[in-house]
Image 1 (cartoon, each protein chain N blue to C red):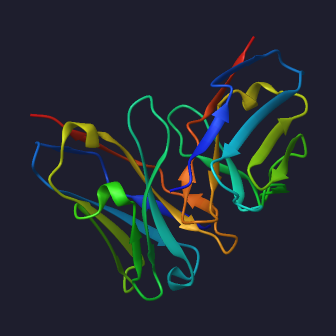
Image 2 (cartoon, rainbow over the protein chains, first blue to last red):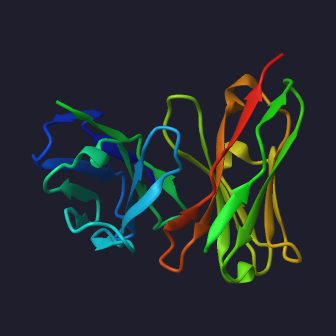
Length: 106
Length: 118
């Protein structure tokens, strides 16, 4: 099983600032990496797939990068609606999720 | 619109079974697979398994092998997930999600809370 490790567990950011979230795979997943956003009481929402392609309707302030084992999700200027938990997911070998990064208001 | 609508909350006793449904609409059901993902209270997302709505092929997470069965009914565009021999640590919100052509999960159900308690 491919293990996905996210860091940090919690990120405290002020509105308008940049947030950078990391995800590491235990072995190469090529670019088969997605990011999801989850707000309390809601289902996850697909943000990014193919490591860097925004899903339909996702604002341009969300960007993804990386390949192989190291990936990054960047939110360029945090809006109030962006405070949530973010998960990475590999789909190179079935599917596994990281443990999540909570982005909270500083 | 494209959506997945799941069945309602369940309360079960340890050792019992639960079967959660996921009804698809707004797209051709047999053109996409369905995965099931669960989330224990306050915890992260755990992939449980996948079923092809085209031919019924399945793949289950190793830790659930032998206790989980995923099926589909193409006549009603509904996917099902049955979990047997329930334990307290199976208490979670269970989600179904559509496997998009890009292999990520692009549409999610609203979730079904399953509580296992004596």
